[in-house]
Figure 1 (cartoon, one colour):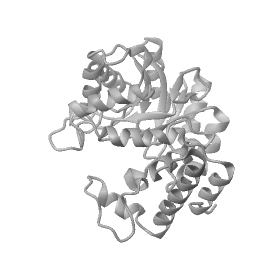
Figure 2 (tube, helix red, strand yellow; figure 1 turned 180 degrees about the vertical axis):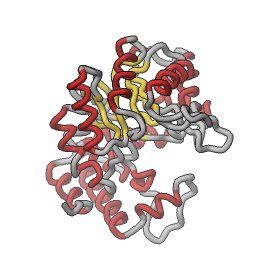
Figure 3 (cartoon, helix red, strand yellow; figure 1 turned 45 degrees about the vertical axis):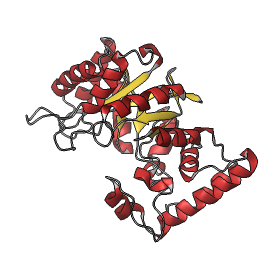
Figure 4 (cartoon, helix red, strand yellow; figure 1 turned 135 degrees about the horizontal axis):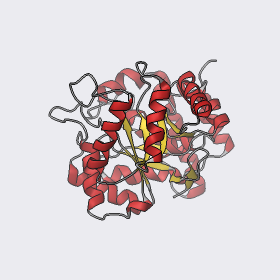
Length: 328
């Protein structure tokens, strides 16, 4: 497993980050523990969750993913100081008017709840899940700064911020001498490029912000199980995948990933799968630190993680880029 610095920090994280949105949704707790343990065996030291995961599932109050991780940590499955635990704040965690957002009040309440569920006394990377237009950015950053100074949080990051919001936050941190966003979680994959590449990518490269893309397999579309003229697979996300990606451009992308995977096999002795090639393409971007992957089974985890071992040549990368290029 390769490890890269998170932005301009000295913190090193694995190029594969285990995403845990599925814990408590499509993955039960015993399976979640097995996946976490196997991820560590594979060299993954970076685990991402959020307080709101997976509140959308009927009967789930939120915080279930964090609870599964915390119970696993308490079982001494891996040394705490060897793991980078990332979680997020912003989402609706109750019915009260202050049970969501990025106000100082909600952040201070939410971090304590996350620490309890994770059964740890610090969070390595605390991320704002999305921008909060109702809270001044300096209020949010000052609350995060206080958490870092108190030792409850070590680094802070953000997710789903457009470029102007991220730049405003970075400027505020510099001007007010507050903690700085060291990472960004954008939606980024081989079939979803322009949103990140147009403005966020040059900004992150210039400002030294680490990039941790989520959905690098486009909700499973880039695994090869969605093909032309075949029935939809049984999946909680199949309908969304069909609406967003199952078109001629999407299928051409899958075909190209398969073709390039076979080419890499000529050198390595075994073909790279569609999913592995899609991960390799994301990690070939110089702005990217780590790709967040989810897995419901050990087999999925092991297959996708091997994408970090696939190295694309400049020619292969250029050939892939051409198929899903966006217009300026």
